[in-house]
Image (cartoon, rainbow, N blue to C red; front, side, top):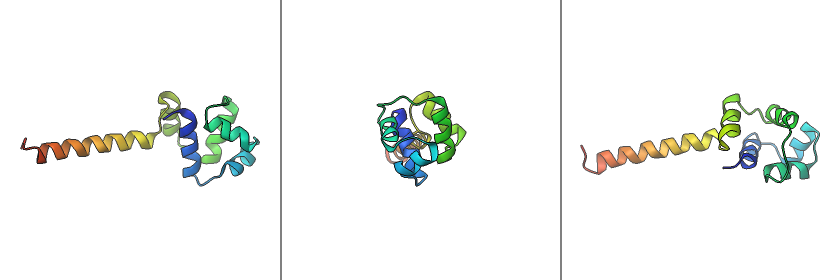
Length: 95
């Protein structure tokens, strides 16, 4: 997942429309769309405003920023891997 998509996901999870976010961070709706579609760069000041407006947690922001993925996707992937491993062990005849 890319950075813009992760920001969009966080905005949607916060229940905020592009229009609402645009008003809160003093940007146009089209600018929000461009950022979420990775067609416009995100300045540090705008990112900080976005974080405050959508209440992104610091840990999630770090994961999104450093890995270009969101924490929920990571947790889901880990959960699926653990589930598949348990199924393999118990249903695959290892034990």
